[in-house]
Image 1 (cartoon, rainbow, N blue to C red):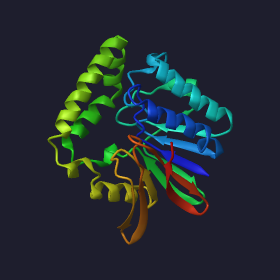
Image 2 (spheres, rainbow, N blue to C red):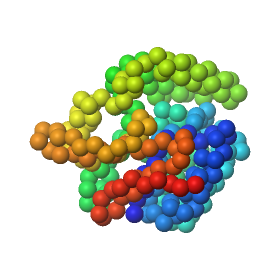
Image 3 (tube, rainbow, N blue to C red):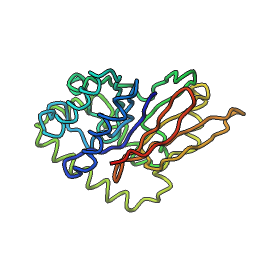
Length: 240
């Protein structure tokens, strides 16, 4: 059994969701062969030198404990934690994944991605994404003191929330053409992603091929996961 989660947005100001996540790692994830976290594990990640933060260390330790019990933990960058690096991977026992990544999931070709690259109607966000994902920008940003980086992230988040309130909801969802192009490029696989906080199962007919797309839920109020095995995939609530 393989589990997929995303968009937990863990932070010190939401202790109940943190508690649910730690319990999930001890219970459900501990029974899985693989746990895939498809981005935005954290509300933000300022750099691996912030691993000493109490919550960051607790999350890394909990993931490491899960991995030590036999669950393979895989993490993909999201739009909030794209600076997760090898230091966090080593501390958590997780492996960082490229976005997108193709899996053979019980005999079904399955493509996983965070999902933000599919929101192509949001031109301002895509320009920002291109900027902050560049190695040169990240290198320059990580040379700044940690406290300064956190201040910059807080300011960027405030601007983002203000901008989102003025944007039509439709442009912050995936673009159907971008979804179909991705499915076509990778040979019409099943697709699993997060980012949009609109959990659902969709079907796309691309070039006469029927493709399944699963959107993972966020964890703002309660948890949710996609459980996949030899019988297929199904969405599950993660109870407190």
